[in-house]
Image (tube, rainbow, N blue to C red; front, side, top):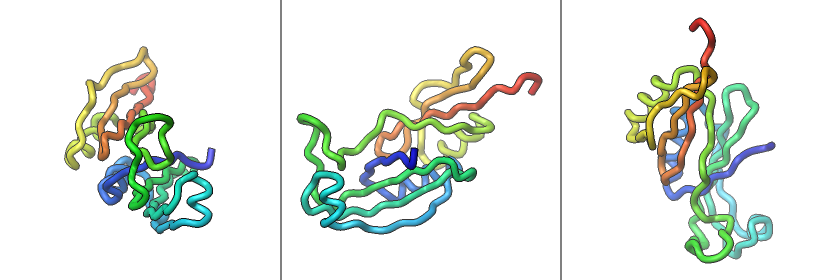
Amino acid sequence: MDHVGIVVDDLPAAIEFFVELGLELQGEGSVEAGWVDRVVGLDGVRAQIAMLQSPDGDCRLELSKFHTPSSQGDSGPAPANTPGIRHVSFAVEDVDAAVAGLRARGSELVGTVERYEDRYRLCYVRGPEGIIVELAEQIVPGR
């Protein structure tokens, strides 16, 4: 997989949220019409994008803010600029510390931190634009 793309309305807030989770901002830029119109199947695209990468370089996340065209709402198949994704999961070393850092920036837990067998401590956190991020702390025996 090359990357996951998420469409947002507030690009700076989304960047800040994912940087808090440990991703590194690789760059920002704009795209307009022409090739991007043809790729996403929309006319008159004008968008800002930001590419973030995990510290190990294995995963990348593209955040996009479409200025034009406006979103079509939720009737029929969703066009490429419809905000949202169900959730993205991040491995963290300490769920409690990750939640505390995100709460300090206005994020909230969706439910509670739970234990899955003797394998993980898991939770969902709601970030900007209603994006749900799952945090997964692997339980290390004897720790």
